[in-house]
Image 1 (cartoon, rainbow, N blue to C red):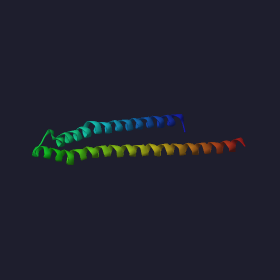
Image 2: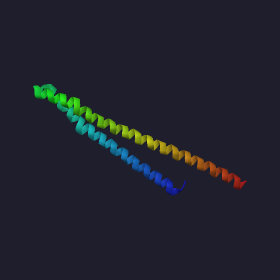
Image 3: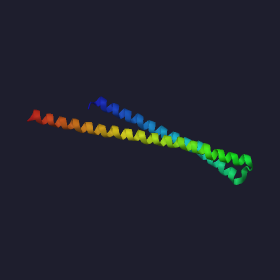
Image 4: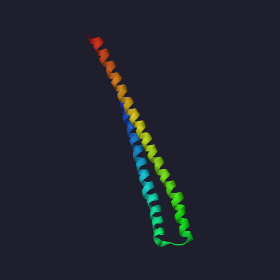
Length: 115
């Protein structure tokens, strides 16, 4: 495998690692800036900071729609991370297999021409 090809594979891998890092950051943002405050608001209302039908409706709405929706976004991010990591693993295995084949052929040709 040429040096250029190996350099391109290393560059592509770094780009994918950057994407994975960004996905992790986005997941943390979803959990810390959306999910955690919603749960805290529900806890505050349930704890008595707001009472009545409006409070009950608020808790129901946030608990049944918003929190599960944000949770689904987080799940999708995690699935995407796993899929991208699987793709990286496949690329790495393929790269190793190609390198092994090339080395095997180089050894074979080397033994033919040196012997």
